[in-house]
Image 1 (cartoon, rainbow, N blue to C red):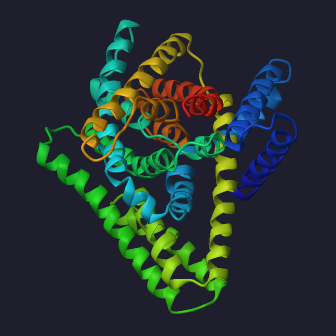
Image 2: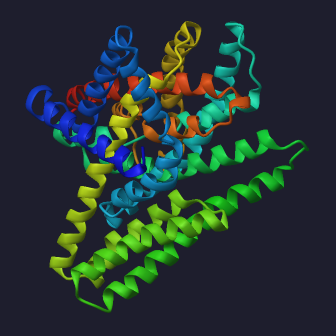
Image 3: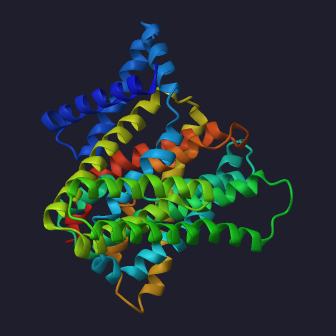
Amino acid sequence: MDLFHLFSILIVLAAGFAYINYRVLKLPGAIGLMLISLIFSILVLITGNFFPFLKDTLTSKLSGINFSELLLESMLSFMLFAGAIHIKYQDLKSEKFSILLFSTISVLISTVIIGYATFYLLGLFGINVQLINAFLFGSLISPTDPIAVLSILKSAGVSKSIETKIAGESLFNDGVAVVVFITILKLAQSTTTISTGSVLLLFGQEAIGGIVLGVVFGLIGYKLIASIDNYQVEVLITLAIVMGGYTLAHYIHVSGPLAMVAAGIITGNQSKQFGMSNITAEYIDKFWELIDEILNALLFVLIGLELILLEINSTIIYVSLILIVIILITRYISVLIPSFALSFKEKVNQKTLFILTWGGLRGGISIALALSIQPEYHKEIWVTITYVVVCFSVLVQGMTVGKLAKRFQ
């Protein structure tokens, strides 16, 4: 089956599941789609006991989708850019210290704590993995996903400050986490001792290089957009920024996700304010909003369907359930420590910390990174644990964070 037919089937499923959610469940879009996809997958697995052909056919078709490559090399660029163009520079500026610390220091703290905890926990269950591989898991499970939670928090009436913290942190920490993951993966693959300097150089090249590339593409896009007044061409230019920028980032080995966030912020602020007419700005907003909604629908349907391909191991499930608690505690610690530094600039109270902790959902990027790990680094263990954590995060935390936010108002 070629890519077009696979994509068509996914779109049909996403549309059908979205309709059922809208008419029956009435849950937030991402949560509803994932829940229905999981139920669909469970029904397929049960039915497969009586009609093996059905399960085998779906398994073979889903196996033909490289989820990791699809998300990391294609969908992520559009989704990060679409999220970034809606971030107001003034809001970002007012929360710059918290976003900077939460998207960097918090990710590193979380990576280290979860890495060590996972290493020793697996050891207690008689599963031996190398510490560096446990750090790989720590880095991929650390980034937060704003997709499902932001709409819930808005309806709960949380402050603009908390909303900006969560949105800004998740946009940047996706890129930072990918850089940390790549760095640890290079360490795991190396047969020789790597110096601290070379690690910092690799990290700097990916992170700083990605931001610089994004700024350059954003400014080039701004100049082109400001020189004309034609919304069709200007929408096409924003597409070129994303696709051209992400492709170039791949070939020069800098962070594509961070490049897209930087380019999106410039496009959503400088280009929109000084280079676009009101009509163009409206078209660009609607275009990228639709792109974001469609890709997110596909993403959460794919996450739900991945259950069909999962190899269930009861021991790993037990480990995953314990790790859910550890990851939540680590999330609290990873936002608490930077908050001490923020106390000189702004007040971060316990209510805010609890909302940031429970609202720090894990999403598709964690699963995609887990699937990108080579089999010799215990891929099957990390994929199963990541899947369980993401399902709990989206379905349980996602459906209860609104009530928590309202209680703290």
